[in-house]
Length: 101
Image (cartoon, rainbow, N blue to C red):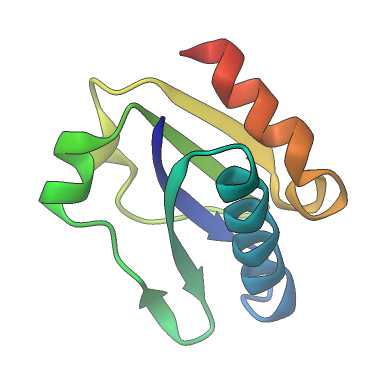
């Protein structure tokens, strides 16, 4: 499965990047391709491109605050979770995506 998405937390520092790392590791362990954009204190990094969207099977939004650019995911299967849940149990988040596809 090809997963794209966004991670973000209210302060835009640690949890944004912790969630990205945990989810990417869990996704790869289960055999998926995964690319997560971070919207943190430094702005958007590792941005999702149009090509990324074309090949995506599902979109994961792991946030604890408002984020920008959600309209670009219109028409895609989108699963939203809390950023804290992504850090605590990233494997469960990936299983949730697998069930949603």
